[in-house]
Image (cartoon, rainbow, N blue to C red; front, side):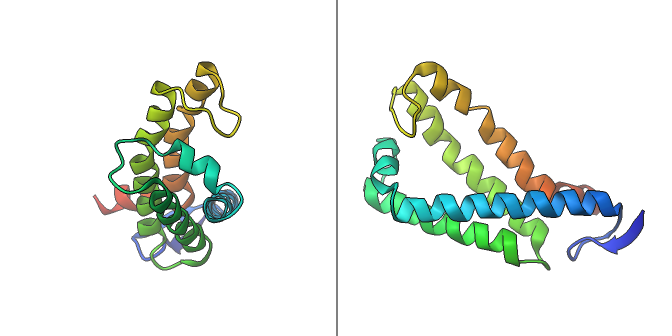
Length: 150
């Protein structure tokens, strides 16, 4: 194990293998978010527009465009930001929490999209959102940083 400064936080003992796994996880999540965000802005825009729940107070197209820009920015931050990486992790996790009601609404309102055209498929998607939240916190060291500061 080697000591290192954990992205501006307290010193933490992290093995080289753990750092590598986290880096790979962070790069994968950042790439996924950047791709998903760019799809909001381009080829999947209509598909995303159809999935915006009616309770969102903005026009559906504005919501899709804004969430696409946010996703691209979050993906880029996961890939590029080093010094404030735990903060980025918490922001990404909060984003995943914020969009979760839309996923629930898709299930409750039986909205088809992206191949989710059955209740079972829409329901099966829901547990993945908490996994994305955990992935963001783990891959950025956000949870470890939070616990070390307490």
